[in-house]
Length: 86
Image 1: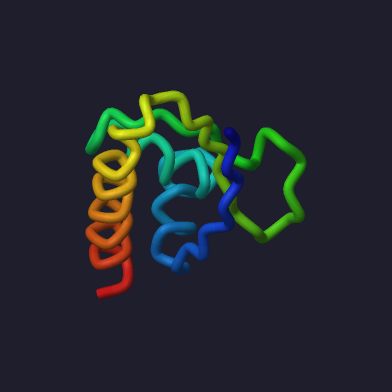
Image 2 (image 1 turned 90 degrees about the horizontal axis):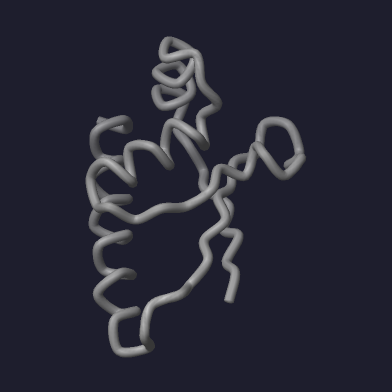
């Protein structure tokens, strides 16, 4: 199963990504990988509408492991947004 969620990134994320010379969604995906081990693909590789940000996620684990992965993703996202919003 594929998921292709839209992520709303604050201006501070966009500025940090520009400073790192990368697309904002790729910046998010790399931080997600480093923090959680979860691999997703930046939406910028899929011709997304300019100024919008997404990532593609392929769900491969056994069904009983999905809640744990979703929890890790949720916790990462909350911490990431707190870092760049506050």
